[in-house]
Length: 287
Image 1 (cartoon, rainbow, N blue to C red):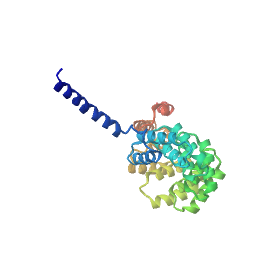
Image 2: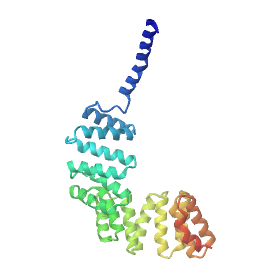
Image 3: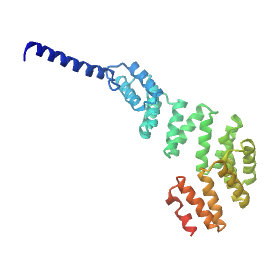
Image 4: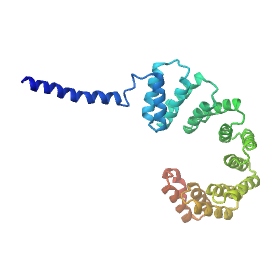
């Protein structure tokens, strides 16, 4: 090879190598050379852009750089948020727990961890978090509502009523608290009290299909099937995709021995996403 060719070869090599080096430096994966602060700030930017996978890597890198930094409570909290969005629920719980090691009584972090416990069916673990929140903030609406829900699931209606009442003192028009209290009255057999709450809510929100289904369920228990069917008809008119309306109406029809109508409602519920196995017994009864 002559000198001119050799020189051009070396220049060619430099031209090829430089873009690769530049790419590496600008790559989102090149996080090692950045400072704790830079990594933290970049992670926040990624969260704002919904780039959760990259945000997770940046936060983990920052935490490795300075594992004892007092600001790590915020980093772990952000990491929990990111992992929750990524569906990594166990990791998110662990991250929130690490954050609470720095700030044990942080209301937002306790609420976030409790929310994941609820999403993953771990109500017994969510319960103490909501209690801690209410120890710090007795008027926290989210904690009152969710703790009342947990009490309802435990059939602890006395304490559920206390939390619903407390929430209604703080937020008299709370939709969820009023609906929860109506359900509580129904559970305790106080059907008229339940109807009064639901009648008031429907008067205020006549296009809310969920409220008609709730009232129909109370009417069903009161043996007022025709009224229940009218409410369910209205609910389905307002929201044809409301699964609970078809399930409840199918149950009423089946009890009335109207098997063809019942079967149609159960099959409609299946078409809307209810697993067929969940309605096997009902469909068999429709034969």
